[in-house]
Amino acid sequence: MGTVRVGLIGLGTVGSGVVEIFSRHREQFRTRAGVDVELTRVCDRDEARFAALGLPAEACTADWRAIAEADDIDVVIELIGGTGIAREVVLAALAAGKSVVTANKALLASNGEEVMEAAAASGVDIMFEASVGGGIPIIGPLKHSLTGNEIASVYGIVNGTTNYMLTRMADDGLDYATALAEAQAKGFAEADPTADVDGLDAAAKIAILASIAFNSRVIFPQVPAEGIRDITPADIEYAAEMGYSIKLLAIARRVSGGIDVRVHPTMIPTSHPLASVNGVYNAIYVVGDAVGETMFFGEGAGSLPAASAVAGDVIEVARHIGSGSLGATGCTCTEHLRVREIGELETSYYIRMLVADRPGVLATTAKVFGDHGVSLASVIQKAASSDAAELVYVTHRACEAEVRAALAEFDALEVVREVAAVIRVQEL
Image (cartoon, rainbow, N blue to C red; front, side, top):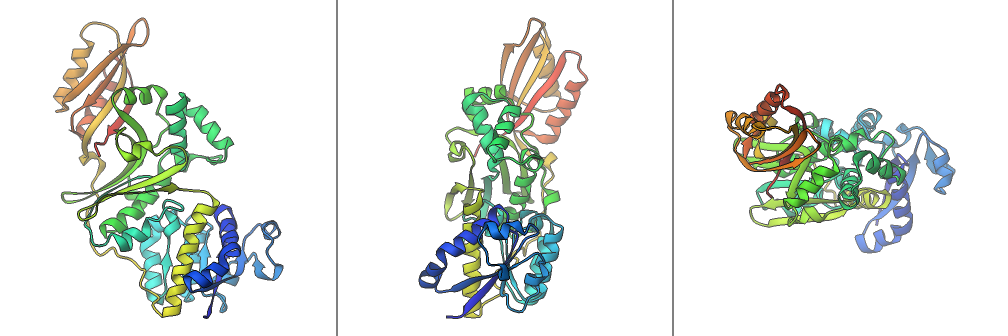
């Protein structure tokens, strides 16, 4: 049994977990997986991390090139993140004939084609299971176990920060600011939570999943993303009254003439399995024409869950090295499907607005909807103050562009004081 030598670049949360797993399970890798994987060298800019993890000085470096371009390294693990230096690291390692394992969703969602082509040119593997869903196996199943299907749709709760916040808002009535502060205090949210709460993290992940599921490249800028900043406890309560839960959902669907990919807060029926995914947990719900409905559930972040996916990829690459079958994990984006514009979407909508509390207002607002071809399924009216009322509409299926046109007209109406919330409704 030959030894596969691994270099690890990036000793943050996931990187430290990788060190722990390799230390704990190397003997199991030999006996159960049939590969001998040695963590030969590690790199980080913060050299204090080497001692904190008990790593031998001779195996440590602050120079990533001493790993990516080294003759005695077979596999490079990139855990830096982002699209700057991480791109240089990955491309340099691939050019040097090293297989690469990464958890870098941003790089793959923005530069995936470049990375895949570089791996193919060198005849090596590029593996990225940990880029979506942390420890949840989803990339492998989509690329292998489910290839006998035409995938119809992928729906994902793929951001633990926002799912935790929405769960706390639903269970305990917290407002957005309080839920965010709590998530930051517990280490679930960054000091700058923009990528999470504005849906950007989820958009990168669904771009990757859509590319694999539909064999057609989807890149991050093509994914419309809306976050949860405007969700209130009132919206969550109204949703519950109507039999729905609100989740930040990443959606990819096969539709006539292309694919529909988006991220936004979504009202889903409380009876659906995704509605019961709470806290920091993630889940990806996949529908195929042969397999039917499947759901992959687990911890979507954290040191060891994500590190377990990285370790699994490394073992798979080591097996390929042993069998001489490197280079078979590349791009499967052989189709060129159109990514539909968000304005073409047809779905139902929840719309909450504050209006003047006087006769004729309900008829006025209903007429605006009707003028734009938006049919109303229900309306709830509640008093908000002595001179204002709150109207909550749920529409039948309507075109996004027409709904937006109606909302723009509401902005010009004197009787409409505020359109407080617009949430899409997805009947899964």
